[in-house]
Length: 164
Image (cartoon, rainbow, N blue to C red):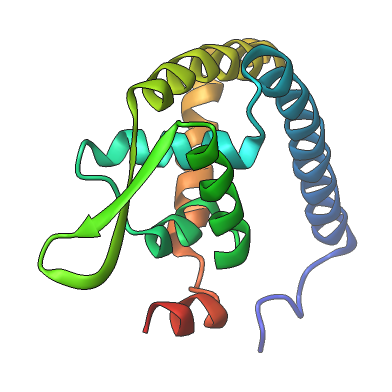
């Protein structure tokens, strides 16, 4: 018997309430974060995500294709963001050592400065909207629970295919 067959209505309502709360918080935080990043740094959430991942990658940079699953966007969306950031002088593309066709994207000094500025905006916004509403124990629980959910999620078929 499927474990969901013996659920009582309270469990189903609990599931709906949990999903409703999670999606409402996500929408609120995403909307306010997008506005704060645009006002405070001139970056979109996608551009901030690209700079954040490139900053973590270090001076060598990353292949554009590796940014897609990290940011959870399609290759064309990431390519457009990288192109915008390159036009702004915040990232640069270079050939990958030992791979004649490979490309690496890395931060420029202007990109590092933009990342620092946007990170401060991000930190203030996330703290005000989310973390300051929770006790330290609740923050830790939220982090552990969401990390477990994302690490246990099956890979999406289209992402596995793109990486092959």
